Length: 235
Image (tube, rainbow, N blue to C red):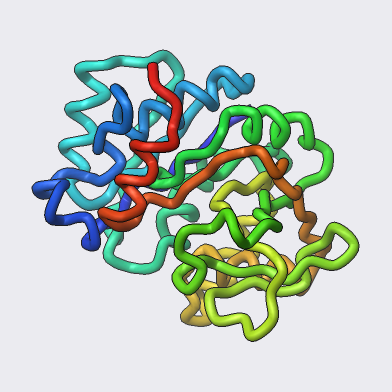
């Protein structure tokens, strides 16, 4: 199985501590965020990792040249200033039409046991890992919210008036997803969420409730970066 990691954004809310480098290269307890993600995906059985770069892509290129890994591809998205759906669509030629793959975010640290569970759910795609315990979420107003019924996601978006879960930024998809993403982009909705909403109009979108004891965090501010340092495991 392959995994795609989106690492194209600017990370402006962390600019005071990134000094211009991609935020995924920030160290958390001895390793850059991106390295934790790649290593844990490999431990979960992922064979090939594709990293989509954008802003300051040369920094990520240099990092992986100095720390080479087998079966790791870097793909540059020159349109990284647009919605993150563009960064997902750019990998279409690297994923087979019926090939199941994991999609992850480069600023989300996620317990490795969640990756392992997602890989085991291979036959239940399309699927999104969901945090149902809202008390575990550090920035609910900025999070992407979902409404789940009967283990299926009924709605998704940042401004949902009613929600009972949070999207943790970990998807199990297959190559057919790109047709929905292309349609969404053509209609002017160039975000990943737009592509997911289009998918949901055509087929069931399953929810995987992460275990209560699992830790994950979206590192998009100095506050959440400091929380990650305090709560994430060490080398």
